[in-house]
Image (cartoon, rainbow, N blue to C red):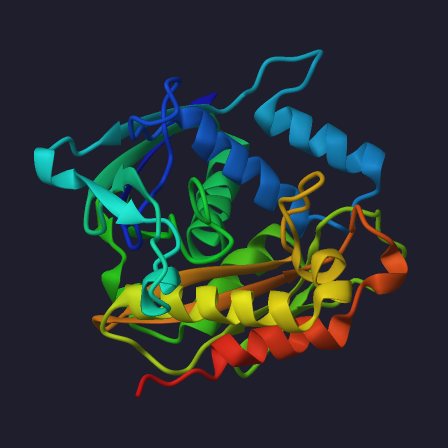
Amino acid sequence: MNANAIIKCKVTTPILAHGADGSTPELRAASIKGGLRYWFRAINCHLDLKGLYEAEGKLFGNTSKKSLLQIKVGLDKSADNIAEFEVLPHWSLKGRHSFTASGISPQTTFTVKLRGPNEYIKKVISLFEVYSFLGGIGKRSRRGMGSFMVTEIEGINQSLEHDKDLANYLHQKIHFLSPYFSRSNNKISNTYSDDKALYPWIKSIEFGQNGFKHAKDIIIKIGTTTSQFKKQNTAKYEASLGHASNGRFSSPIYVSIISKDGLHYPIITTLNTVSDKENGKIDHILQEAFKMQILQYKAD
């Protein structure tokens, strides 16, 4: 028997997601499903590849079966919801011209309607909440763009929940999906110790403790830190923190932005690094230094 769920969300940082023409901002169900599928894999590293594909296929479908999960997305359409945004706003601070792209503005609301089997729908809701904390939608989502937050689930306002201990709240949600996560202060860690497959599963989640009135300040800090580390650590940067030249390797250090009490905070998810470059060049110390620059950042 199928069940329905309605989740209301609000955009935190500009969503640079576009339709078929590559320039018109659009929020698609396929993007949401892709995000859910990605974080489902990242959470469930305790499953072997066969078990992971079977579990994923039941929810999201595969080449031999249709997805049991239906997703519809409704965007609050308004002229004020679409604007031009700097893709790399930290360039402007250095006097460089930062190119722009049309995007969906912060504070824009959208609704996600889920329909699926009763036995899965609660897990999908929890998975969606985890996705809203850790991930994003569209370009530059690993560097703070495209972040969003859940504001209401089935008519229940979530703002009071978000005003509590965010690390504890997220740990409860992720632990509902997998028992192999523990929390210590402001860090959630993967505790599964057996062999894990070579793909980007969650190693840890860390919360910045310094709040910012404007999310753009965090995005600029992420950008300047990225540029600094790329310039100073050329040999190991691409294998450790990602690249878009000579192929594409998505960064295993995923930075998103969350809101609480009117302030914005960085949250960093460290994923297992499976580089397309020489694995011997992966520098975990470099990754830790990159994270600390952002997590410990304080505005002047």
